[in-house]
Length: 377
Image (cartoon, rainbow, N blue to C red; front, side, top):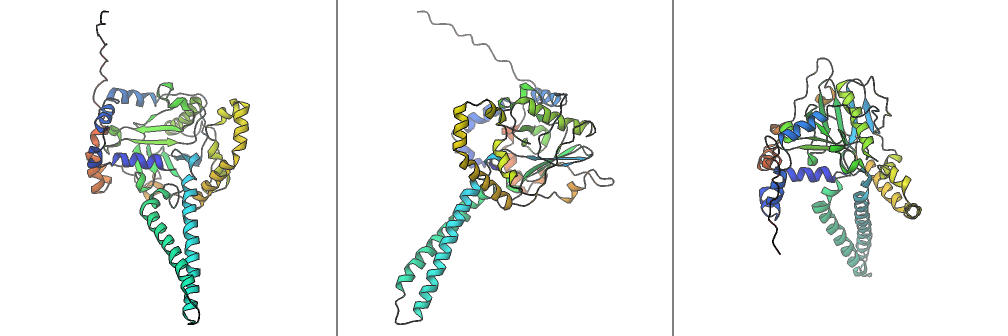
């Protein structure tokens, strides 16, 4: 589930040696440098301040909504959550069975060794064999596989985004290996729901996208986050963004009251995300596709069970005390996350990659027309 956030964070921290070994690095750097200018960033921020919908509506999940706070689920890939859990549980099952078999044969070998008249070789070999399997799998899993299991198991149950209209700040709750908890300014955010011009894939199959450029974050790298459920069309994302914008700029009084979702891992929370952003597709799909979907329903059940297992093996995310009290009378305003908020080794790697995310000054230069003379035949 956290693959995208983990990949983005690793990309920000990609060491220089690894960059030099990448054959297409120079081309990617040049492409990145030429894709964002200050004028474009200003236009996107201005567009995000405008009203884009007369029907603000949030499809959730929303965990907190009051006069001060709006807290929602964020992250992309919620529908795919469960795949890693299934593989992890399979590995744990094999390891457990091997351990039980090794213990059983070891006890038999120990019992035979106490009786001189009975040979213990028949139990000693399988005991050694199953012990070797259990130890080998356990070592490889904790050495190479556990980091991937933690992308959806043994970690925070959800990625969260909290909007605080009193402090005019946005807080991100993520594990440390995905960037950690961050405090960002509300002013300066851009959104894929600000209009058709900024939409991603027409809003189909992706959640609302929020973005803070490197010139806004003061951390030498941009921050991106996917908010809420995957959309069926761009209109849903515009309604979602207008709901958030009006909450932060005007308050919740004029907004429709959404359903508040519990953090408790109910089973239906594991199955419904598989169908987010697919309502329109299912509705207009041909009869053959609908029949095919009915035939593969066991796959949806298996993924859903893996999703539920991952929810049960995770814990409810908890905000730091400073953020929980933000906006209350007499309580301090959390400081914005800056480069100095990270450990020294993280700061060093962010500085090394700062040129990748720097916003170019001024406007994008106009493309020169191609004036190549045709060859005479």
